[in-house]
Image 1 (cartoon, rainbow, N blue to C red):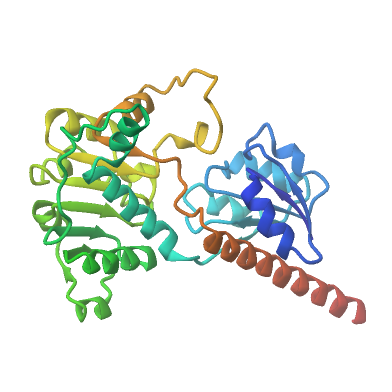
Image 2 (cartoon, rainbow, N blue to C red):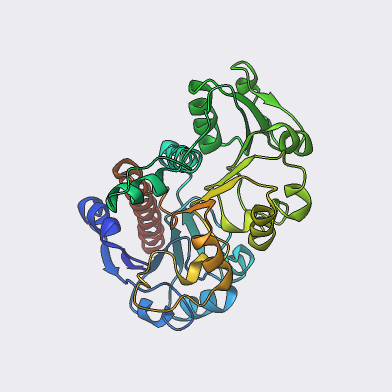
Length: 330
């Protein structure tokens, strides 16, 4: 197949080039938008990512160019108008999952960096300041960790937390009975927020989970609690979060996502003004540790993403070839 590959980065190209087989891929560094959709002309399929725009107007433009297949090289589909896909008779391909450890370990890394003040400690050493005053942290051992969402990534994270000697509470609309055998206790969301020393978000973004963490739910957290978000930016109401940090309701926040990340994340804005006031407050806050959606960024995960995506393109292509062959024989 001929594939227009949007939001392409060098780390994408490495694995897709190695595994692409007979597919022809055009790497487009720009994000998919109404303005860039025309770059897909002459291709059979589009491969998009988490911050691309797959709204109805964009999909209509792609369909008008003859694009019949959309491949999403990520698990979350919250940026895809699936009703429009159906109306336009377009086929959606997406990866069912990849190494859950990549994101789970990113969450653990963010948590450790936050509670042990590692970025500040590193910056002090760089400047020649070896004082450790003000860097008092907290042990993970013995703490209660609340995990919201116990899918593959949430399970990987909670098992790591158990390895640290933490008690794990979990909340999910579909509890995993096998986790109960390992000592995980499922509780209502309110109870989890009230009891946990650390809360980590691992649920999908849906209408039910949008701004799940807001002023009301933040008020339920115990004083000194930490919040981790490696799921989706809109799981957390950023302004309410910042207000909770400023008021001392929350001890710290570490995240790999941001609700307005599409404009900035994965692009270099070092020489340009950042005009997003909320993002500026978030990235400069002394009790926030923020990375730019890199939880998936391991060799293992990237290889799995490329292999899974290309296998699905191949399967679709083979099916269409078989249909054409069958029709010509009739």
